[in-house]
Amino acid sequence: MCGARAAYLFNQWRQKFPANFGKVARIKNTVMVKISISASHDGGNIQFLSQSPLTSSLNDVTCTISLSIRPDVYTESERCSHMQYFSFRSFVSGLDDGVTSITVRYEIVNASEASFPYAWPGTTVCYSTGSLDASDDALWKRNLTTKYVDGKLAWRHTHQDNGSTFFSYYPPYTWERHLKLISDCTSQVVNTARPLAEYNPTVESLGQTAEGREVECLSLGKGRLVGWIVHRQHPGENMAEFYAEGLLRRLFGLDGELDRATKRTLEKFRLHVVPCMCPDGVVRGHIRTNGVGANLNREWGTVEVEYEAPTLERSPEVYWALKKMDETGCDFFLDVHGDESIPHVFFNGPVETPKWDERMKALQGYFVNCYRRHNSDVQKEFGYEPPEVLNNPKVLNKASKQVSNRFNCLGLTLEMPYKDCATNPDPERGWSPNRAKGLGRSLIEALDGVAGYLRMEGEFWREFGEEDAFVLPRLPEGL
Ligand SMILES: [Zn+2]
Image (cartoon, rainbow, N blue to C red; front, top):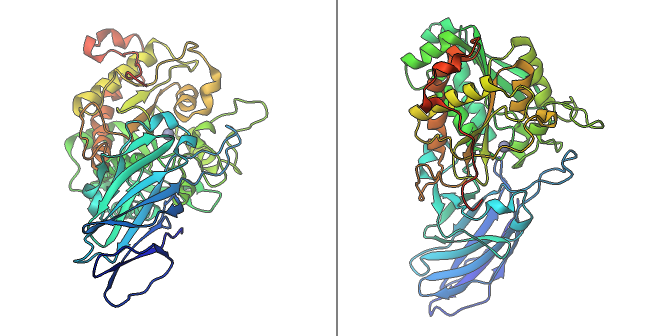
């Protein structure tokens, strides 16, 4: 999309020449090093601004590339144009025995104008020389030189090979990959000879987005309880769809036979899983909105006089999901997100809704503790601090609050970090796609554990032990 083209002429005496923009030519006795930037891949987002002239030192050449994040479509409800997510590809050519590497200082110059600038400190940029296919998920690493200084997010990277390197706020989960996931699950649905058939798996489109993409819902299970799990209302929170992939692969037996915990859970629940709520925003490389500027997680109810939500024009994704939920009912709801600032996996429950009471508190506590016992990335001490006003109907435009209140059920938002996960730190990889997939897989045990209490009457929590208690979360120090 945006091309950075500069040619560096390096003669046999290593004499420096000024950068030569736009020229692609091989001159006798010269080596040409070129780096160009693009964000035209599915879900890409960056604007190329400039490249400094290349300078040389021994076998390495150096330059600075200035970039800016492209904002989402204007959001009427919040009166702003969100931005934070970026994803681009650097392509290097011309390295050879004479010039063996190019060191680039990348700087995003409008980082201070992002939706959450306070989240940049502690952020490490993700990079990979692999492809965007699932087979290369494990190749993503973190650039540990990343710093937020003078309003810019900057990092230094030495390219030692010709070819491409992706840089991304979080590894992309492309729309192409989404289609492959739907196709893989569908192949299990249509194969009635498989053991999955007894759980009546289905795949359907809830409806189309403003730009004509399907919002698919995959359902299975023969239990009395109804569970809904939706992902990626905020399209730049890619970890949410990695999570969906982990969950769906286990539920649909894509990696082998259904295990015992999965079978038990499918005996208790009918589950409805929406792996991607915001396809248009995904393709556009947005952080928070769909193609017409709606922040979907502010579209689940009308809370302002002059702002009706959801509507078919602005937020059809939510309109269709809520319509289907009204048909099926709901006993458990999970809305999967990523959080830019807090370096932990954490939950935000029905606190602030009119339904917040001892029962809700106990259900949230029990569920989170079940989850924690099966996945050590889950913790309960850190998260958003509850506000002073605990009953605030204005929060009912958010998915988990609306659904929890509407169906008097446990409804939670799950947040995963963009940064490293401080609960189990791994600076070199941070909160990786594989960790997000693993967290999605572990949801099964947490569902299995909490199922019996979701609609239990009476003060059932009196039998819970201390270790199952709800803990009022607090912000980590310094945030
Ligand atoms: Zn979100």
